Image (cartoon, rainbow, N blue to C red; front, side):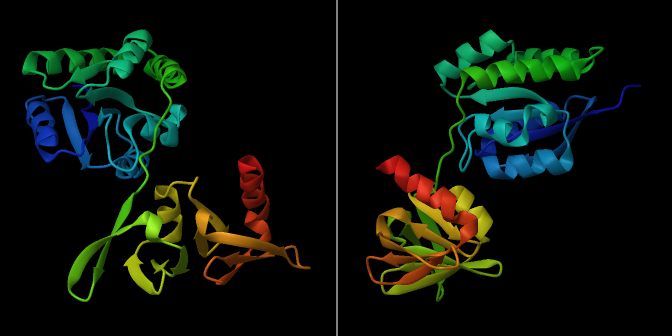
Length: 258
């Protein structure tokens, strides 16, 4: 008796996950190891749960399906059945790379064909090399696209509101929290600096220190210091420190804009 195929379901729609789950529960050789609703969760789940097969939606919050593969790395990627509602450019890439996909809405018969194709690949003599080559071909033809945050949810004083990221002047780290400085107001949210930095558009926000993130448009002046650090002066005259660790990357980003 063969070992069940460890399978992960990734889709931001609950009904879509439920449909895949229902179909998979009818298969005796499948074990569902988890479900995810966004791209960043999917990256973490693939690394931690090590599934052999993933049903991966393309349009996901935070990081799209191609970005998930790019972050995990082809050498660590499981077999993938992509799920999409309309991405015609992606369908051409799948056809070219021989990877399977499910076009929403799909029926039970189409689902079974995609699953059987994955089984054949996984049970081949050397499935890893074949699947890795397919993923490499796919990523050469489709550029991963990350969806960056446009607003942040803030829970404060018994109310919940949304803060547009363009209203954030700078961000400071406080343990497992970050403080969002927005004009004369500041808001504390439970989030790590590393995770928040990865979710904000790098063309708009720059890490200038291990514990500081700044909106590029809010920077007025940079003043070099003897230690190799810089003083960053914002338009509201706030003074921050650009550490040597981030100095070259920050200065290079301004050179690119010149």
